[in-house]
Length: 129
Image 1 (cartoon, rainbow, N blue to C red):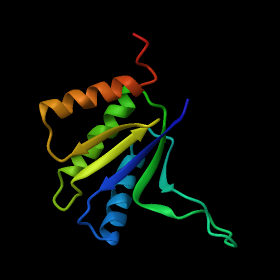
Image 2: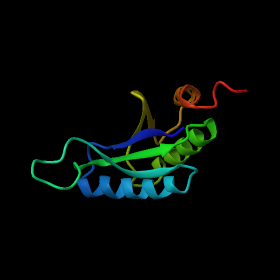
Image 3: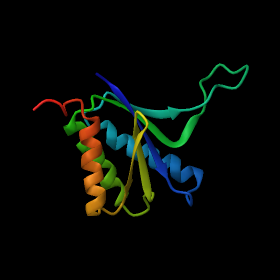
Image 4: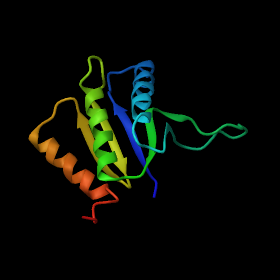
């Protein structure tokens, strides 16, 4: 069962090219995980008279995946590692089914508990044991 996870780079101080570059870099890293697909998050509707799709949201990706605990943990770990790099955004927002998890470059005990609960909530294998 594939689920779409929305990922947004949140940095109010970043210029458009920085957000785009960050999304491309992070997307390349996420493609190396056990995910079905990674692509730009398309929002809104195409303008009247256009043939193309609506515009891609700046600094945003959609990741299609089988949301097992292992896959979600790998995804969160990859995002955390990316956030710790010099010049990376301050926050990455992950969303599945309206449930949001915001990750920052620093890991606190509280954030770690929130991450573990978010993974348990959305893992398709959470009920198996």
